[in-house]
Image 1 (tube, rainbow, N blue to C red):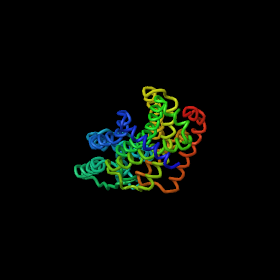
Image 2 (spheres, rainbow, N blue to C red):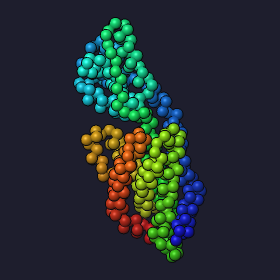
Image 3 (cartoon, helix red, strand yellow):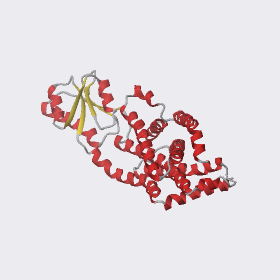
Length: 333
């Protein structure tokens, strides 16, 4: 049994390296990560943004407008919400004692962190004002651009492992190999398990390479492994669905694009929707994978939370499998 399963896995890997399309999908996450690693510095050097308390003196607000884009807010809560968004923003306000306060998420670029303090010190020096300065760090030390980019590439890598399964199934359907397997000692369960191995091994390889290229290996690697394996089940299910509903590679590519759009919507929703509206995304397994990897890369997660996210992914993926089980079974007959 084990030998037959490993033979299926071996055949899948060989097919992947013989087919140019699947070979491209194998190296695409790595190439994308290398390109993204060069892109990060240019993004983080963009113009400065400030979330300013509108109750500050007009002269103070004008001074910040000289250095970048200024957005005005009514309360410190609104300023903190803005600072916590995905882009680089420094919050400027005064505390209850009348001291200037620079609010940072903790993962800003050097300029966003330092320049607001320099602006305030310059105002103090020029106007001889009796002003005190506090810097409040409300977050973690990870670039938001790098964080979101890394998670997006990881999500793509997880799906590509499954897509590889799908295109291998398409190839075997076209060559009638699947029908030939029905008269061999191999059971359908052995075939599915053997085919699924590539959908787990490839994402694991890709994820660790992505983190290494982006310099993000200072995380709990065991948590990364667990979340990658669990998330791979999403890609495996998607891969089997693409394989059984697609008659050729062109149709497979079309179906793959549709799947990527659906997955992207759940990620975009997780980024743009306020926390109170995230329940609208609970139905999507990629959402739980996204926030799981996000918290791991932020070093802001416990094994208990990993268990919760993994349970959601496993439960939702199993429900989707039950809905399409007959279709997958017929497609592999």
